[in-house]
Length: 94
Length: 484
Image 1 (spheres, rainbow over the protein chains, first blue to last red):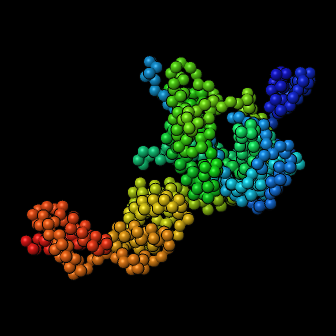
Image 2 (cartoon, rainbow over the protein chains, first blue to last red; image 1 turned 90 degrees about the vertical axis):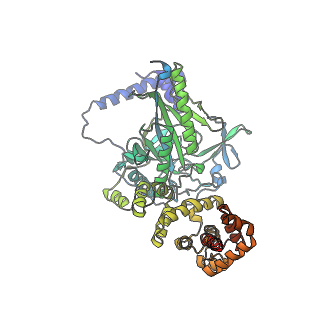
Image 3 (cartoon, chains in turn yellow, green; image 1 turned 180 degrees about the horizontal axis):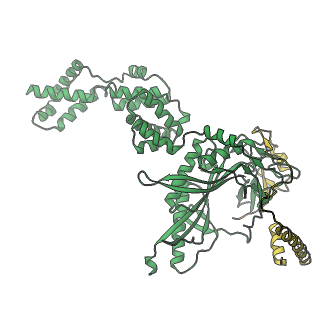
């Protein structure tokens, strides 16, 4: 059983603000998803490697060669506030 | 048992992050350089803009395999990347691309030197590849924080030990050897000041004989090897006091305050350690061919502890000297080049480990910055051994050669630094000195040995240090005894 508290905790980790009613609905939805995963877990899967990626590709590399970066003002153009060439954010205290 | 009789044991595990020396970042083509103006080394990939895709820099994987092999790890032939999710302004995507269950290297070890010939095996749990985060600057005056994303996406290897270290000193020794090993591989400059090597420590204490681990704290903000040692010493003692007071150690992250010399609990949001790892869908998995591992193995340089052993046996130098030499791979190589030209290996060590390090220190240079030829040093040594120049003159010549590379023989000639060892010339000098210092001469004849030293000093002064001190001493003595 996924409690609404657990749902709220997961939501807060993902910075999603939920109303109580929404948390209730999501709790039921997640419950169904977990039920389904529990069903899958009952399958006999020994000897089958876990799927790590859905594409039948591997070893996609890039050569270690420089591609010019954005200019500072281009990089900062995505920001709401800036100062001294940096992205300005609310004060973070460790 | 009385509390005061309790014997505690400290248990430490280290997590070391090493920035890899590559041309570009791990998942994009931005230059991997330090010290540029903020936010001038970024692109849509490392800024985490929507619609971009990371692509792995092949050099990162090759460096990682090299490190794994040097740390005696098994290299996994199948690896993948995972997302480690957390929100912090230095992480533009809201997750760090890391490796969770299929890291590049596992189950290795590093043997650190302890007393005498013994070593202690420190097991390496794993080494995995990940990307670095950006840099946060706290602007107290502006009541805000500033983010520089230049560092975002710098390739990192995180090397995690088992909880095998039993003292802050062992942790320090492990770090020294790890750093040296990595430097030998030319995979990182390992400069803690620039943040290219960073260390977090897990530490707990338990009563001696106990096999269960105690509750650990994680120490951060350890900005130098000295800080690692000092922070661990403080924390070990703090935990002992907590236990002796009848309380329990709380599992938490603590920060080392270098100025106050204490650790303090970091304020952190509840549940922030729930990273919800899941496979990174933007990167496909990777396989490492056995052939690639073999090629890297074959190209592996001689590692520090092997080099030390070989230098001792091949050149009959002391363990102490060999240990200093191997601290700089370039100096160790230079030593071997000198040893080919000159049989006085102990003397070469003395010069390299004494005078050279002192000069490098004064000049704030590394060995790479200076242009010293093996023959220059061996010429100085051979000329000193043959009595052609004094030790004092040798040191002067050494400095002059570091300033401007030039021929030692020409320099001795030009500066007139050759010692006078000619018997007739020295006898003439001895007679002059005796004549001008009759008092001291008489004292010597009356048995006062110190007077000879004074007379030699006068001879050296008169010749501006060029008289061979041993010869002139012998001659003055002979003339005085003959005159009696």
